[in-house]
Length: 253
Ligand code: G
Ligand code: G
Ligand code: NA
Ligand code: MN
Image (tube, rainbow, N blue to C red; front, side, top):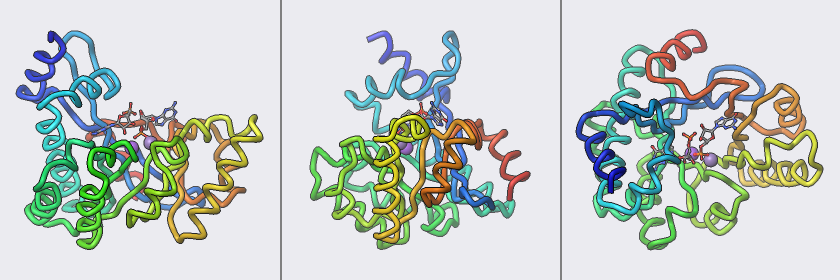
């Protein structure tokens, strides 16, 4: 209860913020996008990651406000970057709660229009978990958004929270290879086989492959050798607050 009350105040007082982590092409060149990652600037406990509070929020009505905050904040930042000529793409994580909202597609479309952004500037990251409540309805909503031009990525691929069924059902353009396979790529033959097969699956289907959790140059080179398109991880950039992400974009684009 304490946590929930704190979190409710946090939403009201604007203690939530988005950080941004780059996704970069392994061949070099400008970023393919930035992933928005939620943080709570807690007055006593410092900066908290989503694992510390989202599982609690997801059980409650608060998740709806949090989802609205995340979308609105990401679009506001994205519009500021576009006005400055930093025409990057931002990826937002979608929750199960977002997809239960009857007006979700309209909310996204209206937000893009209000900020004068083309739908292709926004990407939504989806795990299979967010589809479970009502898969048919969720797929319909995501289909509508994709027809509008919003991009979809299948997150945590290979974990069972993202499977071949979702890949077939949804109009995704990007597969994010789960960091659990990427982190041991150099020392674990099984993980190397798994990553290779996901990269080949993506290539065959004409989708971008993005490896998550790339921490060192050896892993990045393995991924290049496997033909993986892009990477996200500490080697290329930590999640940064909006100011640091803006500096990073100005240096990089
Ligand atoms: O931020 P961190 O790197 O600790 O992310 C942990 C998990 O929290 C990720 O799996 C991500 O999908 C989820 N997450 C991060 N930000 C958001 C957000 O804004 N909304 C939702 N629904 N999930 C998020
Ligand atoms: O949405 P998803 O759960 O995939 O979010 C990615 C998570 O991975 C976030 O919690 C993010 O902070 C974390 N992360 C990003 N880059 C790295 C990295 O290079 N190493 C590790 N260990 N974690 C990372
Ligand atoms: Na994600
Ligand atoms: Mn992921």
